[in-house]
Length: 213
Image 1 (cartoon, one colour):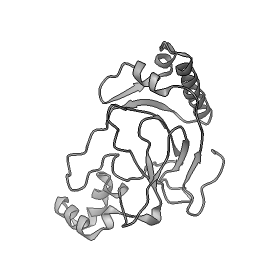
Image 2 (cartoon, helix red, strand yellow):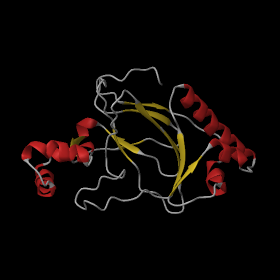
Image 3 (tube, helix red, strand yellow):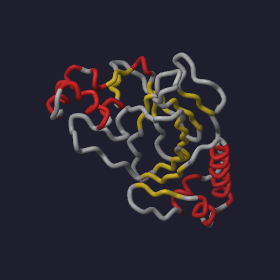
Image 4 (cartoon, one colour):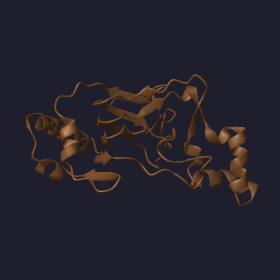
């Protein structure tokens, strides 16, 4: 998965898996602090778990080690919900909006949802950059307090240019539970377009258990 190159329209590669273990038990045993709780390996190892919970923990720790061996820095989160962007009501820039990741250096985004609602991606051909939609662009110009020559820099500064709008009849793709995904990021050396994705709306009483890096 990590060595297969992105090319053409392929900017997401998934490792489909049927995982064993009780990941819900892990979520229930983690002491949550706020809407997003970051869990380190020491905390994970300290959990008193049943046999099925231990199997789930082994899966997570193995993924952690594989990603670190690849040079990534995994973060394990229990997510009740993400903060909503209320600065620009007509154009939210939170992770519930379809967006791409950007980096100044070559990198990829890795993620796996072990429990809860999974993330979604959408083919680039089925969406349009929001800042290119005339109505949205007109509203953004009203927010921009500066010369026209600085407008594009304004869009980048506030991350407006990272967000996308699905076209009519677009079909988002669920990344599923337990699958480990590698998504293309917008960086200077990328041979493909960045992968457009979003966080899902969380399910009631079912926090997400997500590894991302």
